[in-house]
Amino acid sequence: MRRIVLLDSNWAGHHPTYFKAFAAALLELGYDVHAICPEPEEFRKAMGGETVSASRLSVYRWNPPRVRVWPRRFAEAVHLFYVNRWMVRELTRIERGAGQRFDLVFFACLYDGYLRHFPLRFPWPWAGLYLQVRAFRMPGQPLPYTNFVPDPRRLFRSPRLCGLGVLDEGALGYLREVTRCPNVEAFPDLTDESPPKCEGVAAALKEFAAGRAIVGVAGFLQPTKGIVTLARVAERMREADVVFAFVGEMLQGVYSAEEEVLLARVFALPNVFVSFVRVPDGPLFNGVLDQFAVIFAAYENFPHSSNILTKAAFLEKPVVASDGYLMAERVREYGLGAVVPEADVDALVVALHQLLGDGWGSQDHSQMKQYLRNHSYECLRASIGRLIRNACEMRESNAQNGGLQ
Image (cartoon, rainbow, N blue to C red; front, top):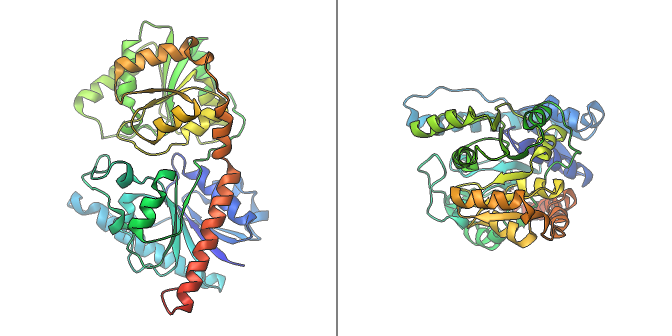
């Protein structure tokens, strides 16, 4: 039986959902799983408690040292140096304790910012979900909030790379070419499909709305979610019988002084509901989204996939999305809502009036169920199964040919 390390250093937003789904799929496929994440108790409970963890699932805490670095321009590189050193030492410790060498390390979510500092001499065969292939959709454009322009040719130089999953099916050929790794699989952008519960924030939002329609954004609130644009729309529509909701952790220190003033003013409006507390994915998060009449997904500087579309299909809620990239393509193909030019307040006001009126109810929504099937757990299990099998075959082929194992 093969031994897989499943690793994620982040526990915000979609990360717990993916991590739990990956672990469940790998266990069902017959692998022993060594899971490393920031919230091991929450994860262990979600996976069935001690019964599972004592058999084929071992759980460990992601807890690298915190390092203060000055000047700040060196902070990321130095911090990730210590993180990577701790990671290799921790994996070595766990492996020695298990008494058997790991067959593969699978990174649940790989980002460009981390990959630029990934250790070239990583000691184990590895694979992972490359979450956002920005170089394919927006070549030459830097990552948000940085000046770093990602280039997969440089990011994936590690000779022990054995496979990549991507959420953007259009990028498969591109990544196979530029990484010279033939094992690239399309993954579904799945979500937690627990029945929604109207408790906590959802109940407070329902009471606040008092029967009015709600347009909302939820999750990790940052500029790429179109927060400033939605605030401008809320201010424009303050006389309408509509509530605008901002729910989730708010990224701080990334807005201009003018934007900060705007947000403070809008968040105080009587038609705006705010709750800057993380709502974990599952029944409670679904309960928040279930209160929305329209899910705001008009993201900016964001050419990637988002499982908010899967949420919308599951809850049968319309979305409004920005034109130009993958989310717009999917909204049009599957009839998930409306598409507007990016950051266009006037177009958003028109689209919201249409979706809140008869514009949504008169449309054919039959493709929503197909979208949900295409991004289901069953599809994820099949995709990760193929990726891991091919990765293990690549590892064995390298060993037979005298290459790196």
